[in-house]
Length: 226
Image (tube, rainbow, N blue to C red; front, side, top):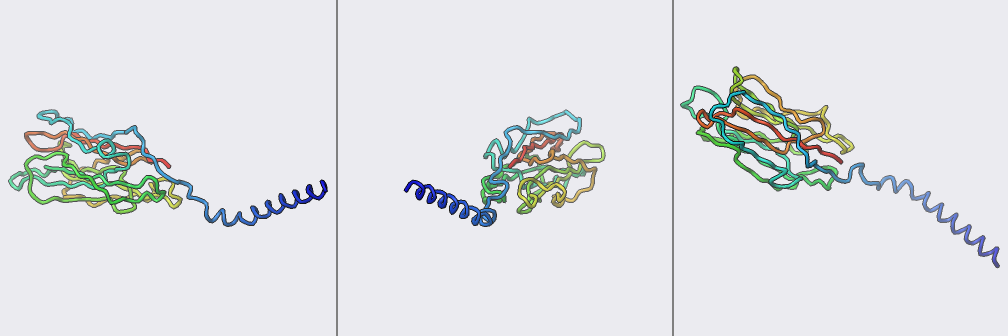
């Protein structure tokens, strides 16, 4: 009787082993993606352009997506207004930003549809917003500025962005691109890039309160990690 029970136990274990082996292909098909969710770092890295001109500077003006709206918000939209038509110089006279929410729990990192907008600064300007936006399924990784030949002020802006790689585990920086220029003014290009695998979550700037022109601008970048 004892031998019979022992033999039955061996048979049960063997059968259980066969069942697991048979299910292996299905387990592989149903395995979760390499990245189940994303995190955005609490620590920001800032990259700055500075004209070197200090007269009449405003206090720091900003949009802080991460700090003001939450760790799932990134700066994906910039709206600018040009100088009044009576002005001879070309420059950005007003700037606003929009923070979009992304679903960090989804490895595809999709937008949720939530949007928070804020005016960053405003001097006298010509009506008519000119807007640039990061395309869907891409993530902001910096700004490019057009500045005056004398490096005195910001004339135009566009956003740098990148998609995820196929495994959805990192930004595909080799496929990075940029929006169009908001206004289309000519000038010297200054690139404010986030370090690799970081996304842009905010902008700080100071402008000349008399001339109405941006003299200092920096971006906030935070690590995006699976």
